[in-house]
Length: 116
Image 1 (tube, rainbow, N blue to C red):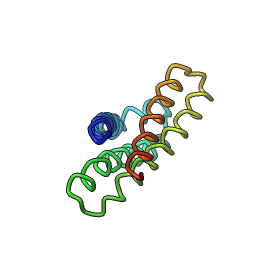
Image 2 (image 1 turned 90 degrees about the horizontal axis):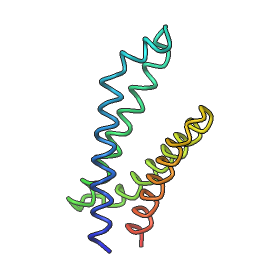
Image 3 (image 1 turned 60 degrees about the vertical axis):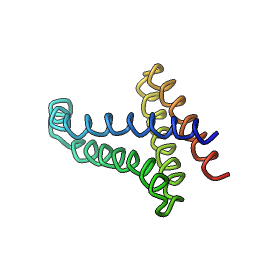
Image 4 (image 1 turned 120 degrees about the vertical axis):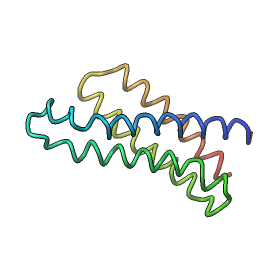
């Protein structure tokens, strides 16, 4: 069970590091989409939160320093995925909704597995 939890932690961490970094790097492109850049700060904030969540999935449990932070990071990522699923459903992007639900399931598996 521990091995499967570590695999999920690494996959989720890698995924959120990449996605969060892309959001921060491509924040200037968001100005072109909205025209006034009103969403740029929100886009950067979400990217930073995703990167911090990725770090929180690995380091606390690996270093055994406040290991409760790992399942809390999983809960945070779960909340992000629920909000992302609603956003994509509102935009009628059903493939993204399915992806969000799969990532949500992995994050919840991690939370439950690390709390037991």
